[in-house]
Length: 116
Image 1: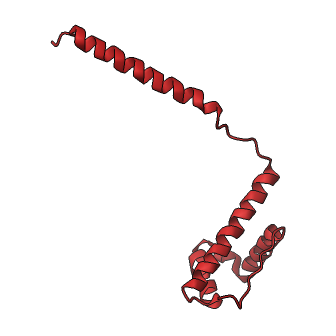
Image 2 (image 1 turned 90 degrees about the vertical axis):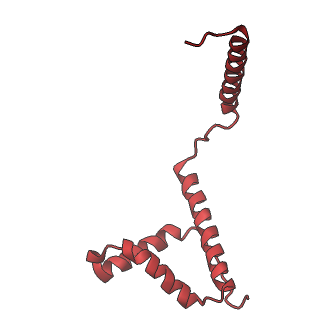
């Protein structure tokens, strides 16, 4: 078997000390970035803001690619149609749309169709 030489033993102690130092500094740094306690309403409002920001960006990107609003709407329909409850039929789709409108009515977004 390999015997530990004094040089090897010192190297292992130095490595062990540095490893413990690294771990302890990482653990102490955890207090700096704690997860905030956010109310359900604040989470909802932030989610709505994120949704509208992403939606506006996707519409702007589609326009920059020369995609018409009609074609972009058809594309979104193809993306989300597989997740719809087909057994609920047209009435289910209408009620789902009404539910979504009610959910998102707190925030407004205005699109200028004349803007290039």
